[in-house]
Length: 554
Image (cartoon, rainbow, N blue to C red; front, side):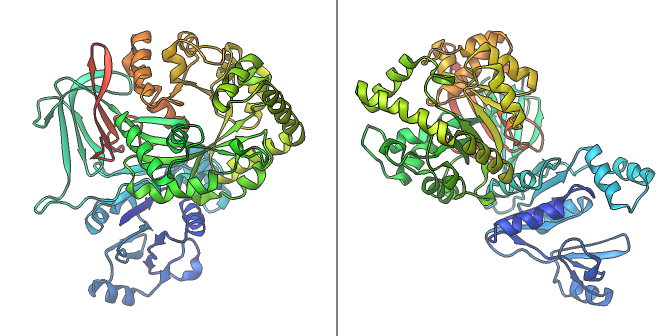
């Protein structure tokens, strides 16, 4: 059972997001509050009762939590056993709520001050002076509770997607030992990788969140100077495909492949992954058959038994026949985190050099020269027939789901300008310095492959990640097809920049920020306790331990 208290200021839109989340996910339970006002007053769905009836129910123990504010009485019933349960709460009641609902997690729905002021003004209930005073007096959240903050400045779809992700991603509370109120783990004598510095100290995690960061003098697990860093966040990997097809023509059972993939990532220090699945198939080509919907269902069904946090990244293949119908099979409830526009038209973007494409495709699929020529012609024909419609459908789907929209293999400034016009904020694997510079101009974060960085160059002859790093044009690193490369890249960049904290940020804080994950990616109080312990042996980083939401998983 997971219980969530939803809090937020007036104008943040929490009631709207809760209603939309419940509509998208019938399995989520909302506790219906009892309030001493008429139900016709509007707002959230509630049971309006008299003061006398409220007192009777309160005396009978019908409420798990009750309070009074602004001349009204509020009561919250007990939570059912199992599943995901949420309720609308006052922030001043959170400490009492944590006692009433063990393992309580808080989701704060807020918005930037200008957006809050605009929304409150549109209601016409308060003067500008009253609105300013309301915004100024917002009380802080109590310390020590696990909090996920959603900044609801965008569309309803984006807000709902963030809320559903926060609800789905919370760990199930662990049984607590008799006589203890909290589960606690202390790491001491550690080298802490903080957002802007490396510091010797200790870190305490309680009930799945980071509770204290301090000196190393406390008693706990002696890390002997090992690094304690945030868990790694992977935005784009097709590593699962390698487990599903370990050899050409060999298809492994998906359930076993998902478990093995999950365990491999945990062992590499990755605590959050966006599993990349292709949408868009070619009916005549078995190597491009449809698979995403079925595999996504298997991943989502396996989540309770997996070690790390799994989200979905849909790679929308423009050069295909079935992209639009495959996109239609997904919705908000699938918690699609990222959608990337993939245009693999031969002779441009990643494979401007057709000889590199021939080397890659012939080697992977065993094509003859004639088969390769037919492959190239077929993809070009699909781009001509469906390209514009497929791009438009992908952009709209990402907006509808509240997913992050990413470009892929941008090569020219014109490519990046098109991406910016679509609202893209993440560019996967730009292939030239020109494109990376244009991304920086448009405020688009760049992501490069760890294998490119470690090997010293691109296997397809494009710009090297190291060159972009030296030019200050690399923001995020993805393991791509080698999970172990993510940690190695963080340390390599730290050495290159003489700034280990900055190097780790490319695989922790920066991907979290680009993916809209405000509860992880940094060592900070109240954040999710996704941590890794890393030793450096002859300069090489080695994972000692991986922790997800306060639980050791590797």
